[in-house]
Image (cartoon, rainbow, N blue to C red; front, side):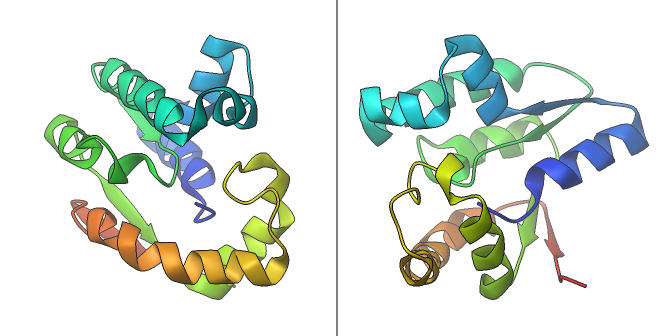
Length: 147
């Protein structure tokens, strides 16, 4: 969450002449609802079920770069699925950089929309070590540093 997966994914896909899919946008377009609305209606568990189904569907597409939501690798054995279908990349980003990006765009993120800036930093510090266990299973890690 907030590491630049979509921006990086779009640039990579252009460079290698592949299609690009952002799973969150794909879900929103297919369900005609925002991620926030889906979370509100179905809860996180319901959203994660949808996310896994969509991931399995688009993982079958060839010549595509896929940017997933930050939690996607951490649920329903999704990281193993991604690793079995292609090259996976973890964009390892310092907490202050993630926090700055997330504070700016928090209304678009259901897990953050009601949090203060301080609570967002606390959330990142709590969740990142747990999620990193999954992220570090990626084939490649790129250290992202803000300039």
